[in-house]
Image 1 (cartoon, helix red, strand yellow):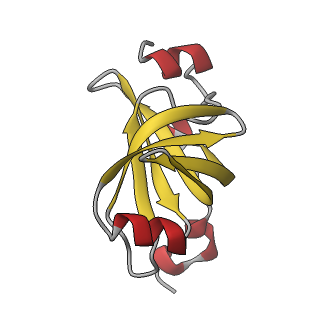
Image 2 (cartoon, helix red, strand yellow):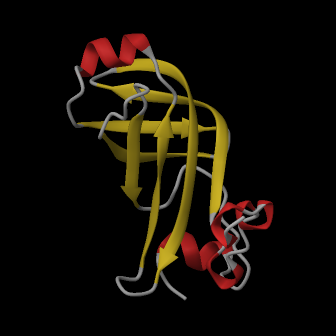
Image 3 (cartoon, rainbow, N blue to C red):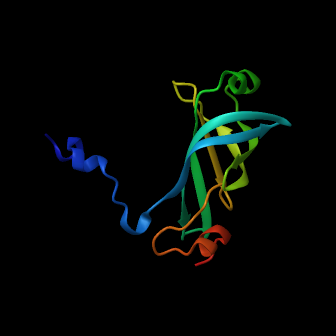
Length: 124
């Protein structure tokens, strides 16, 4: 087995680059229409630009795909922990849209070494 194929490789030990996130239910609002979706979102504070970047995928959703037709679109995402504006784009072969934003994320933040308040307002 090569090192990349070992089970130990699958355990993500990011150290100081731990990512915060949310996996589960969310509501997307696109052009005034709400969609109950499942999302997987992660994020991190980027010291190079001083901003918090969050991103992930929206599980395949037929009604959302019919409305967007695979095109980029602004969206508001709400999880049990918060709300944020982002952009839907890049549909993968499984029909999952990429969702990304640069702002206070729609989930709780508290990475090791980065206080939650600092990460969400973009200051360390």
